[in-house]
Length: 436
Image (cartoon, rainbow, N blue to C red):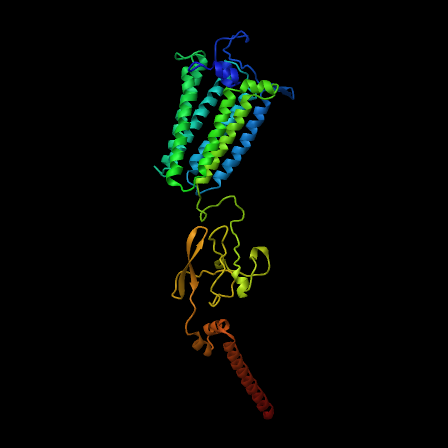
């Protein structure tokens, strides 16, 4: 295959641009340029409409649905690093898939005097913009500039628009035969579509390997990158090398374009998986699609100590809690059982964190999913025995938790006071009757 020539490529694959490249063909009434593949998937008739590349069209529809799901999950991560930047990449892939569906299904007739040329040029431009967006996304992880800012977002957008414009213009000039280009002189189009895009993908891959090796302790994201490269390379090899053989082997029901579309979708999904694996959101500020952000952690030591087990108020059971009793520490360990059963709050199953102000609090530290978390525990009031003898409210609370001796003394005092009051009332009643 000569450099810049599409003859060999179009012989193996039924790309839309192949129908407007090459020398004038006698197969068309207007002798338009045409490069026919050696074997192409058969068309089907549905509702008096001929649909080309039915299997590939179905793959495009599946790709649209999967891309919408990935966009939804990315948008739900409000605090993820590079969220806006990776969204631009998926939006471009979504538009590229929609344009490819229109072209592959044969919605537009493959002529040189209609909208077909502009749609093919737009498809080429979107492919270049997609590779450029992926390349610029590779710089976000190095924190050369803050992600999500105007600089980061518009650098990505302007770079993508610039490459879209270059690829679109070069494609249109080649198809129309303007500015020294022609359907037979396709070197410029080959450089823009294949050489520059391949360089962008290679640079992105090298940058991400450096990022993972130098900054991350986890090496699993490298497997996501390897899977993305594997699917992309396999798709391109099938499309440009074994497309005609596969088409003949399956009796023209499929061709290389179907497998290339599926492999490209899998490669994009692996890019999403890689981004998700290296990007962690702040759970404190995330408002994701997760419905149950609150988890329940039960301490087995409570059963051994005989502490009362209370139920989750959201599940019923009549337990009463205040808003202060619930601490959103992590979605898997939100409720922390109290370990201070001798404190004034020891009758509660879950840990209570009082306000930070005051002098009757002591600091402790507990380790959770997010690391060491500093909590505050109520400090046991000293000298409550003397206070309890005076019948004060604090002494009453402390005596309740202190033991049975204080409760017996307090009950005896109450009984004696009540008996004396009743005797005084009876004396007053007898005195009043004697007056009559």
